Length: 207
Ligand SMILES: O=C(O)CCC(=O)C(=O)O
Ligand SMILES: [Fe+2]
Image (cartoon, rainbow, N blue to C red; front, side, top):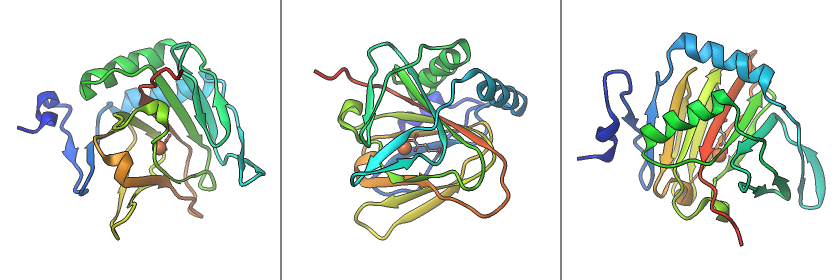
């Protein structure tokens, strides 16, 4: 029996994506529409959003989206030369964390929030494979707001898969997904509304 079956019920039907060498489950309607609407409004106003600067090959670039990092006090996250100190949990994030833990069967101690304000905001192809995430991280990704194509690209095979993440959907990435695939959100010239994505993660303390 597939492990996903353990968490299936009438409202939370997960769909396993047809990706070789990966373990990705998609719950299109994880949150009810009204709950997702309320959460989108709450997070827009309650989160202290920041636009970070990263250094790539010695040059400074503004990250093309707004971000925030919340979690337990020892959850320090480093990527692209950025060191993110966690903001404390706030009630709506803590409740979501617990619900993600229940469906994923995995503990989370932090969440990265990304706010794509319009079609020119994006996230380049990457893997969530920093050492502090461990070898085969389980990542729970909640999408609110506008639908944007989410791209998976296999690292060595000519395999690409694009899916549209629905308002209120949850995407679980586990197993060898980060080892074998990159993922990202492209820019678009289409007129699209804003989108907030939350990725719940477990950060191992670094010596
Ligand atoms: O916005 C998304 O759906 C992807 C976010 C992501 O990949 C990340 O935060 O690492
Ligand atoms: Fe990611």
